Length: 383
Image (tube, rainbow, N blue to C red; front, side, top):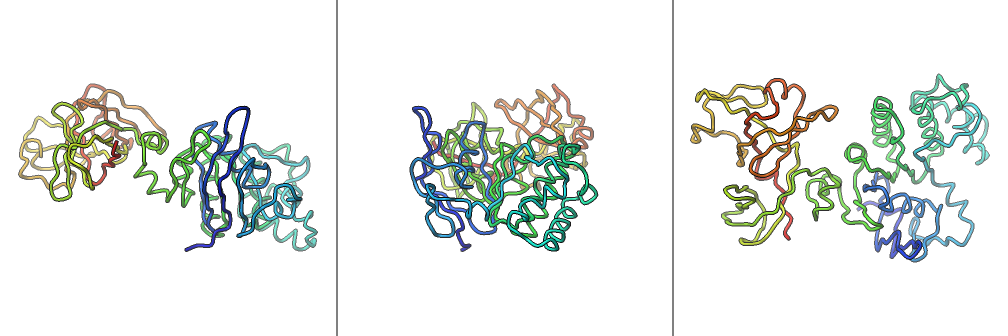
């Protein structure tokens, strides 16, 4: 078990006649990246500010390296062991070098140490050529890289990132996320990331806390939370686009059939109760599309030809996808690197596919299609 560097017990922050933050328990492990994910107003930034000793809680205790923090005392020594990077870079009106060196100068580092450490981080963040440039002349991406270099050069015990990529254009954002991903992996810097962007969590976070209305709804390893949300609200936050009410109608040897509409059942696995009401959750990237061919000898899946169409000769099924459902395409929506295909299968179903698949399968509105997915891809939430 990893060492806990930061811990919260019974934390509350109060506002005008309402509770802004209510966190009974939270632990941050040494060397991990923990993300707070949720909509605007969820309390993410407030929690970050309390953990970074920038805001006092009304109730509860924060422990740093096992010792309780007294917010009524001078917290400057503790703050100097941390670093915070905000959405908008807060840079001094001086050069890039002087901005990155500012924290080291406050700590009375030697001139040689300052020079060596600053240029190490200017190089790692790809802005060494900007060392003598005025901060006022920087682009958004360059300014945020300068702000991050100023944080990393201090070798903080905890790095706080408050929506650091939100204000950047798409190419700058992608390049910076890739660099930060490598840096965090190499340095094992304990990091707390606040974001409303799921892709940032998937790229950077070891664990994630889903927040809404000042509370943590679910917290755990990123893959676990994204694939096994505990309720419909969390499912929406983590990008599960298909959430369907259903009833367990049959169970046999660890597999179950869930009726989701008249004439439609989905096969899944788990420990369910026959007769129980449930929510069926399915991530769009788990749904594969196949064309419906009139030729009984062929069908195409993701652009590859297959012999013996499973629609016409079910005894020839070789796929592990136990769910195979005919539907009609309602919309094909570009989503950056992929396309969202919205289907009417007698119930709504969403799939993510590549541009190549859209072209190879000739996916377009009104076309009949076969959607397939594994029983193991289905997540069930008991109601």
